[in-house]
Length: 372
Image (cartoon, rainbow, N blue to C red; front, side, top):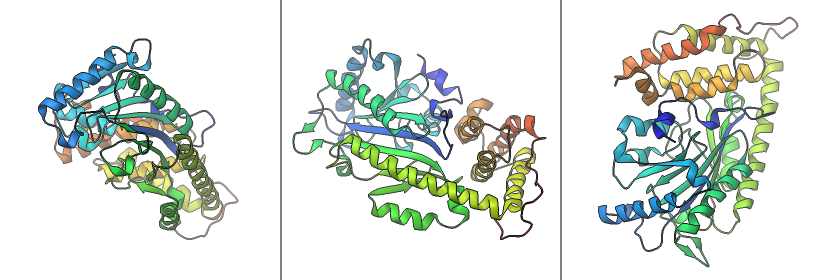
């Protein structure tokens, strides 16, 4: 496969809706941190040890015939422009810190639809991840583990019988597994319950971050819930525990959405309608404002207030309106104001076809209630 095709497309696998899914869980990810024996961790690498690590991984990839490795492409970051590397971040295939480098010994292994990806020489030598739509942690782990098994047949991992897999960050030692789910939680946010819920989550050994993980801000009511503990539990236990907590949060979000719909339908329809109106008429729009309005629109879609917008369109727009994708689509670098102009155009291209399907207020709903 050609990585350029993935970069030039808005699509990645996690954008799809899962059959029967409720669309509160946008995506699931399982990531495995692995390091090679006798090679310094990436933060202690020089050019020589870095190239030796990359060549070792490349040889393992080339020998992976009739495995998932054969379906993946390897690209070094010195072969990609800074814009192309940023596109990988916006697709959730690389971390911001990883993509900031153009070193020849850093890069990625990735399959055609982006569901399987391995960051090479980020914080660890290998960060193997599977990223799928909806709540599919077990499936993510199965696919990531299969890829990990193929790699381990060719590579000598740094492993301790007592501690488990050795990693650059002590918090990843043990299984080396980080599992996460991306949740859309507008009802929790509207009703002011996010802080209380997330404080309780912290006491359960989980953490909540923004859309691009650690250090990123929460925008568009998108929250990334992940495990903090990797030592003393099996991979299956970590995934099952996160799945259970995620299901509880989803249930709470559903209850609050239904209550909003019953108690404040007019205000909710107004909120969704205003979001649609601004998105389809704005001349310029910032990324944060667009994601906030798309969150309101998604809530309307999920509640059936708007019938013709699919979750896939909304997921695609999360990526399509980001700075690197806008510049790639336009074929040129742009300053912030021109990106805001282009962002408004891209959104309108997607939504103008359904302009006549705004939410309407039905008879028999409550006329009064607090603001949403």
